[in-house]
Image 1: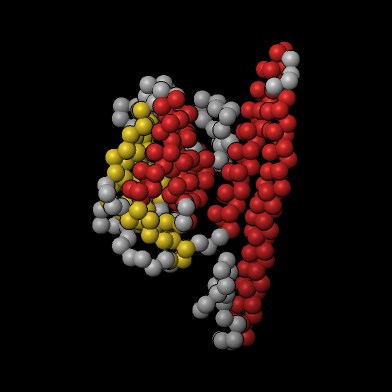
Image 2: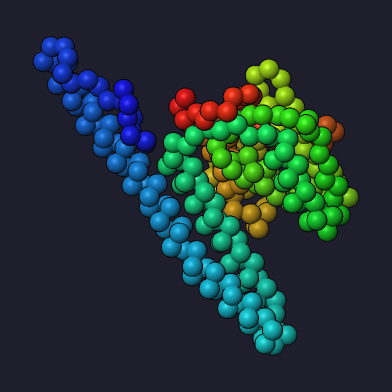
Length: 265
């Protein structure tokens, strides 16, 4: 049965006795109503997030312009306002990313996880150096995996951002890429305070932030990571690092093929 993207299978209504056909029609009607409800919720989140971007950008620019002319007594309030606008901007972008990931049935394409990891580590290296952190990479030359286009880049960006917030000055963040016959495994390991069992069980919930009370974050980073990894047909887990810190374990299907797969393929 060939179905349009985003459409779930339907029961056949032209076979079987009348009672079965009537039940099949009722099932199809219920499935259509559920699809409409879920679709409208996703569309609302995406539309609201998109509409909020412009006023937030305008507000940020106004605050930045005021910084050069405001009296010294107001500088602290302006800086706090700018930080809050930036936080809201990250929140909006996070909601938009989740809405997009949930609403699509994307193709999974081969991607070299080692190359992506190398590119993202190079991109984050200047910030790590500025913060006094050691950012290292241990990756094989080739690590072909199946993933939604651009998903692994965004996953690593979110994980590296989280790791840098958690790691104290002088600490180390390590990205590793390993392969076996079935899976490509990407680890992002920090030597920060780590998480308790309860924190790890809740860390992928939307808007959840740890006991450290990081007010700069949106609480959506790991939720986005899980959504993108799931859409790519993989899984992500959190483990204790040795001797301290957090080990984020992302696993994707290994591949050597070039043909794309749909999300349910």
